[in-house]
Length: 282
Image (cartoon, rainbow, N blue to C red):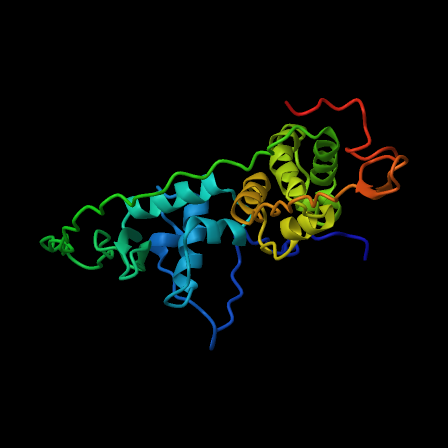
């Protein structure tokens, strides 16, 4: 009973799968078909492939400019711009600048889920190559340069008021208490302080300046808070306070100590007729 049979087959070992295993569920809504020529492209970076898949999933009319894509994804403007250039170079995107009837220049982007230069692999016997259709090149006249007016200079105070300057610097340095995005470097505080001083010089209360600078800020990240504050300080500068003429009050009435006649003078004394120290008329 204790004799072992050396010819008995060994127990079957469980098979360990290698590589990836796909568990696919059929989509019936909210899906986008992406070609393997894009998903497995050997020359595009992973950022460009993912960006192309995102763009192809968007509805017509969605914005795909660098600013919008940077706000949507953690990649910065440099990587987003480089990925868009890759997709243009391989025929997945085309961008051209167009002028609207209002005169505004916008960028029109066209997405191709199947670039014309890509040919699908064919099975069976080798056939003569079929020439790839070439999209007609539309010559777009160059867009004339848009005339831009020079930026107005920042407001400057008319007088050197040290108290106003200190109040302006303290106001700018504390704006981050209203919005953490308005935490300014020290050099920008010194650069904008004269403009705030000009507001204070024109009779604007510090709290009114603070409300003007912090009200209605955009929700997206502020990449240039100093430029936004400088724009508001320049474009919304209130007019100077009109100068009110100082009324000159006449001297009070005094009783002459000589003739008891009433006359106007800053202090009590004698009238002109009773004063002996006045020069006589020739």
